[in-house]
Length: 439
Ligand code: ASP
Image (cartoon, rainbow, N blue to C red):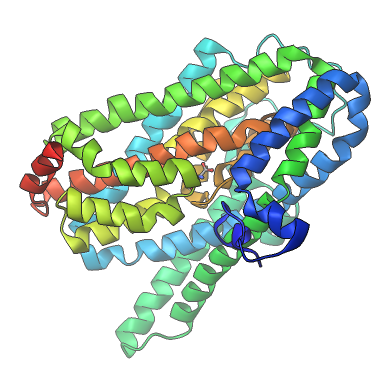
């Protein structure tokens, strides 16, 4: 497999020929080139561009294919990993609590931006030929409660029912945790449950790799989809997408500028400027690779060497954060769901807002720290509240540009929570952080 597929960003320089040349161009550059060319093609070709939409449909079908296995494996593996919290006690619980709270604030911010600035309003999508739209049913709490119960786990997976799938995955994770404890109590030797936990870890990794393969289709999908959107809807669509990108950047900057800065100044009581100077390498790597996982080694080095956090605390909190803490992604999932609802005229009730807030947080926990991780989770949130999956087709073209900022936010959030937890427990040498200020 080419390097492009192993890190999702850059192709193998050793591979030869046309294919080697293609993979030698970083994926994000190929995507942006496809975006521009696709928009020009659509503008010139007009409604006829619909004939190449099939290429985009295939791309989106592959994304849909990943929803169930990615959620299942990463949530089960995530819950099983939380089992190790016992080892670190107070550090773990504080970090998880902060991860969840910051995620919630981020989603609410995304929903607020989407409500006030209405990025999807004003585009006439009636010309678009759509697939079957999931029916949003009137809210009934009894129905909602029952629909969350995975009566038939296989049926839930076959029908891509996200809420009951999450409930089932959480239960499997908890089951593994409890079984593992029992095994440890009996003989102290890891048994079958520990092996299953490891298998889920590997399963999550395998599907992350498959996601990276699917992401290689992005340039083709993006070209076809943007040509279709611009060809059918004209420049209105471009304006709406530009607004969405701007709001994504504004939302991420607000999360960093208000939420993280507030936590650093008031909870961690450290020098905010010193923190950002110490983190600049990690933020730059996150922005350019669009992958929290790929940035992990740099984030670890920055938190330990420049921010003065003790090794055990930073290794634990930063690694956990890189998988379960994605505030940029959570904010975006809230924002893009409203975008899709506005675009296709789907009325969302208060109950739907609640479901979006919940699912965007869980989705950001379940999202893989790789380029496009959030794009896959989008389908899960949309399906739950009846927003057409065509929205993915709409935004896929500009996702990479937004992903870069989301990832920079996610990584900054991991470090913020690490510094705050370490401060609470006296696991940080603040003089290191002050000296980062003088660099
Ligand atoms: N690429 C992001 C990350 O690695 C996830 C996302 O797509 O939002 O953190």
